[in-house]
Length: 91
Image (cartoon, rainbow, N blue to C red; front, side):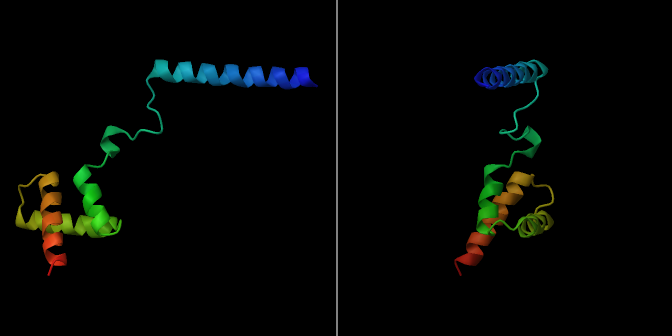
């Protein structure tokens, strides 16, 4: 019985080892790290924190800034939304 348990343990370890080697060879990204296109800019995380994680509200604030600065980059628009929200909250 103990031999069977040890055999199963060895098989599992070998399978996991093979999976790790294959993942490294194929260049598959690890699940713990977001893909580059999924990574959030730091200023977006700040804005989301200010609106208590309400993604829709954050996007509305960004789009409001886009109407005021049509040529601004997304990062600039987020910074402007943060500044405007801070000003509004300090009133």
